[in-house]
Image (cartoon, rainbow, N blue to C red; front, top):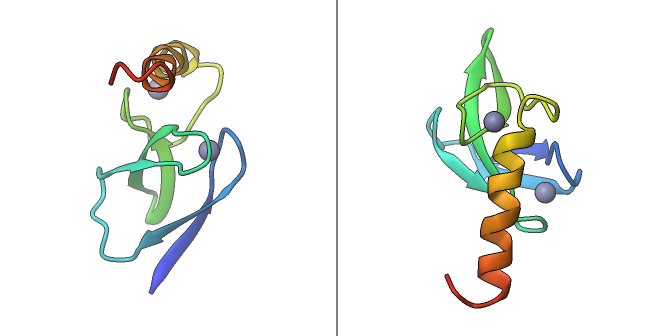
Length: 80
Ligand SMILES: [Zn+2]
Ligand SMILES: [Zn+2]
């Protein structure tokens, strides 16, 4: 069994095993976004893994994304 989410950044489908615990980090396999699984008002939500917001807010998480972009660059350059 798995829960299906859409990546809040690239909208790819993300399958998460339903034994994943709230707060666990999830990496989107298509854009490498660092997401977190949270329980918010009794519902499973995908939020930001950096600031622990249960709802991903592209405006508020701009800074988190910038950090992510830097990390992605490092990965692409093979430095991580
Ligand atoms: Zn994604
Ligand atoms: Zn954030």
